[in-house]
Image: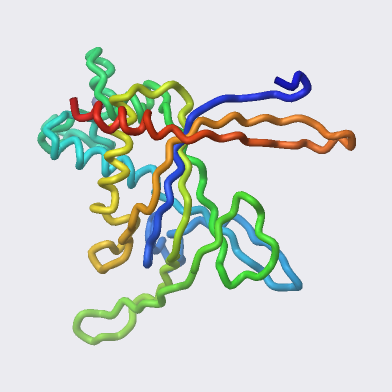
Length: 263
Ligand SMILES: [Zn+2]
């Protein structure tokens, strides 16, 4: 190893996802403003602006897939809902779940908590932010930004009787192929890997983002790769920081994971 650079070795999943139309996040906010993709700045090219957005809700989507799949397999895991009891102490949790972090308190940690954690324990997984820009933007695109189709769906909310408009709003949506990277911050067991991989395979059964009952949020998982990554960073003679990544695919480990959950 080169002594003048720093290295970090870790594993990650690289997932390629395709959607014909998705509206992620919170939907229209108060006042009819669009809030479903988070605007995080813009690139400039000859006076033309390319807005960059963060796709929200990807972690929540996988979380939801984990819950639904575990329930289907009859395996109890944490429920993510924050409100778990009425004021009278009656449970609001659906059958087959315990409240978030309860399993850790009882020293019987479930597979979902091992991966996703809670306020009591940090997650093993880091979801890399997915930042998108419109395909219509013709300037140079930064390395970490992905180019997809972005447009606005303009809609009217009408009064039931008189049909007069009470609210106009635009919901931004995106379409196309994008990559999601999930980095492993700690060693993940075979069982945990299998659960995660199967939740990813299950996720298209659950709509991504809002309006999924109206046909939005359909997804296709195109590819899932488990990688070992060695990332290094050092300087060149001008003091510029040079970053490099060496990757190796771990298909055998993926197969072993798939076989390990459910046990
Ligand atoms: Zn749990």
